[in-house]
Structures are given as structure tokens and as C-alpha cells.
Length: 280
Image (cartoon, rainbow, N blue to C red; front, side):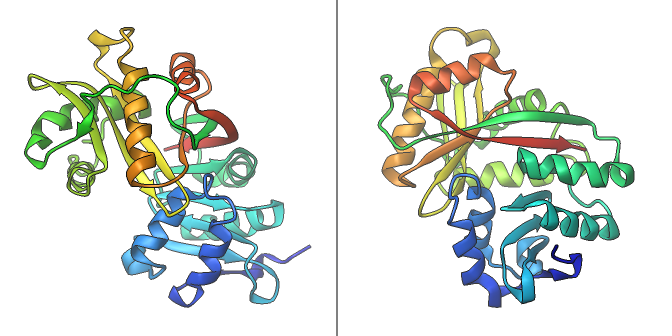
């Protein structure tokens, strides 16, 4: 058995080895890989630390420890090492998220110190597609313009609150969340159908690497649900994601959200993995 002391904090000198490990599973690792490709491994830029695990300084597993705690390719020994670091550091994250087996094992070791969780999403199917959408895209779904920030923001807040169970305005008054919404608009990764100032459908491409991208924040105005906006809107997002961002499009969804899973399958997504999330 590898000792927990084999874990260490990584820096930019480890970048190529880290990216090689992340790229071995581009769908599961798209969020972490996107962060590293954007800002590197320096904690001051990363907004956290990247922990590495492996024998004699080699890397076989990673754990991103920032706003989220995200294990990568983590077997039981690596999980024990990462949980030990996380316990000693104290909880700084708002969630633990990633492949279900590793997250469940992390939580088993951290719950006595960090618990209780606000919510646990035990099974979140990871879905992906590399094909043109199987339904007709909504031609009115487009990139959101910077001047439409005020129109889009209430829809984003409603989506977040509905999905996560708390408002993004909690804590810092929503400053970080508003900055992220504005950033995604600025870089062309916020897509929506807006009819006469009303957001009908919206989604964001939250993470991008050369291999894959991840859709997040899918939302339809509650008064307009059941009219096909989700399927047509998602088809438009997939079409644009494949054209402009990456050859593989992914997302993950709560297992109990049967309508959303049906929409994604209708568009052409298939289930490829299972995530788990622990929310604080």
C-alpha cells in the first residue's frame, strides 16, 4: 500500500504531467483540465491547490482543492491521502464533486470532521455526445450580448437556486456569481433564447479543453416548460459547442431529474459515467 505521505502540492513545474493525466479521461476531467489550461497550477492563480499522489514523486492521481474538492483518477489509497490533507486543512470548499466511487470514499472519511452536508446527490449521470443533434436546433438560441447581462442574470439566479437549493446571493451578496455570469457572456459561452426581454431558455458552456466541453446551467422559464424549448435549445447549444469549442460535448445531471435526462437522450447524449456531489 502506498503511504499517504506520497501526496504533495503541485506547481507549474508539474503542468505537463498533470495535463497528460487529465487528458486520459477528457469528459470526467473537463472542469479541472479547463482550469489548469487557463491559469496553471500556481495556487495564487488557481484559487486553491492541486494535490498529486503517486509513488516516489510520480503522479497517478490528482485532487483539485479550491471552491470545489474534485478527485481525479483516485483509487482508495489516493483517496485516503487526499482526505487526510483535506481534514488537516479544514473545509474551504462548497462541494465535493467527481466520480461517484472516489467522492463517496472521500466523504466517508471527511464526514466525521466536515459533516453534516447540506445535501448529497448520490448519483449524477455523466452524459456526452460527439454527433450533430438528433432534433432540430432552435434558431433563436444565440450568444448573449454583454448589454443583456441584466436580462440574463435573474434567470441564472433562478436556475442556481432551483438546482443547488440556495441562492448564489448568499455569502458575498452574489458578487462572485455575477462576475462569473458576466465572464461567460464576455467570452461567448453564454447562450440563450430571449424573446422581447424574456429569457425562454438558457445554458452555458462552463468548461472547455481541446478535447471536450461541459454544458451547465440549463434552464427553461417555468411557465414555458413542456413546449419543446429544452430539446430545441439544447440541440442549438450542442450544435454551437461542436462547431466552435470542442469535438465532444458533456454534462452531468441528477439521476432523479427524469425530464432533463429524457431531453438529453432525445438530443443525442449517452450516459458514460456517474458523478456524485456533496453540497455544503
